[in-house]
Length: 105
Image (cartoon, rainbow, N blue to C red; front, top):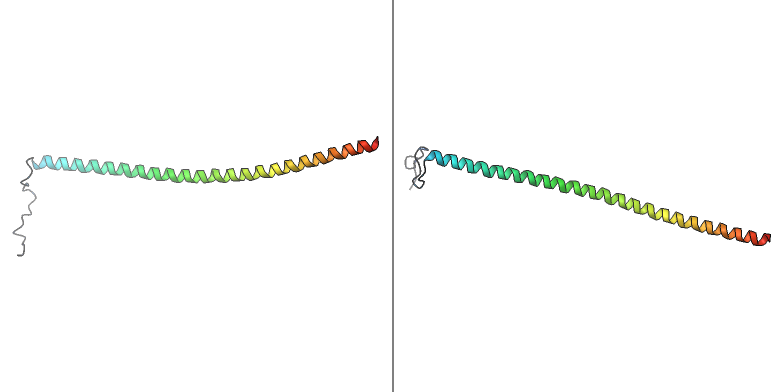
């Protein structure tokens, strides 16, 4: 039951019986088919890499903009607090002026 090398025909020049086309045409067709799917795969792989890079860049940019927006929000809050304090100070000064005018009369 052992298969020997003599039992198996290993000559590559003998065409397969189930193909009706000549071997040269089949070789050309299969090589062209292989080249097409390889090219398609490489193009898709490059697209995926480009999309991954784009996602990374957008994520990084979004984080930078978020940080800028948060710092701007904090700055707005601080300035609003300062404005409120200055308005209170102005109101106190105006009240003081009114009192000094009333006393002077």
